[in-house]
Image 1 (tube, one colour):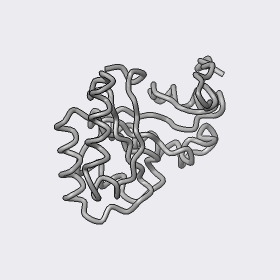
Image 2 (cartoon, rainbow, N blue to C red; image 1 turned 60 degrees about the vertical axis):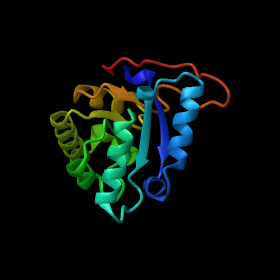
Image 3 (tube, helix red, strand yellow; image 1 turned 90 degrees about the vertical axis):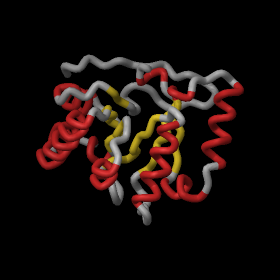
Length: 172
């Protein structure tokens, strides 16, 4: 399944612990509209402390067994990203905007993003750069081998519309 064919659903880690009902309801809705489960991605924010990692990983693996993909959103901005990578390997990691902003000018951010990318590539995890707003950010990230992007550089959000998408030249 191509990344552009996926539907990402944002959830907080605590919603995974509380009840399976939201996930089961989502799976039933997908079946009703004939949306293949393999196209659904549970996107979990890293901005919340996960109290019981073992139970969390167990629940995530149950959902994976149902055919769902898993992403860690806002990676690098939260509490447990590296621990989550060690305990289970998500299908996607979405780099937080704070790491991306002006990356072409910030050596420490560059080193961190290169290291995260290398770990993810070694583990078979797709890396998505979130919040890309300038051609210079895009070019630097492309030159690091990142192929998946989100941000205002490409399209602005819209309500009940599909926005026009811009594909910038990777060489500014």
